[in-house]
Image (cartoon, rainbow, N blue to C red; front, side):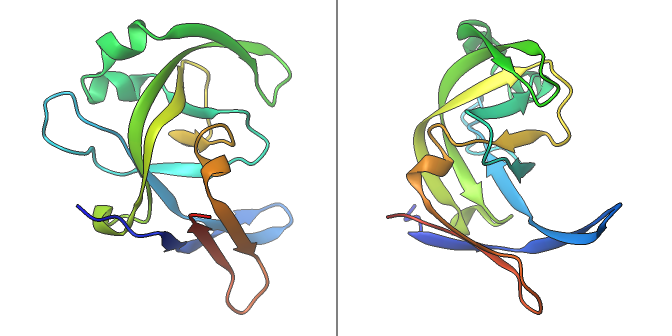
Length: 152
């Protein structure tokens, strides 16, 4: 499969106490252990302040990746709550982009941390090994906010 070199991510309006904010509606796909290709897309929140990409631990079970995750390096990271949390660091190939896998960007050997910490989204897409591989163009101004990921 040939992957694109850039992808435009749809924006989604999210209500906050300060009004509606447009955020990228980004998806991430993981490999399946049963050799059935890629997983269904999981919603990811772009977190430019996160050191690494965090994934809810139960996703490992859903994809049959428990053995890989359990063998991963045990690490500790500090969450936005200021507390240390445990996680298992693994290296996986992933697809990042919109819902359609043919329009996603491929990321080889991405550092992913599976955690039991309560996350606001199934995936927090962090700097280390995923976002740092792309140029990000995030324009939040109306009438047409946009978010584009591009290979340098």
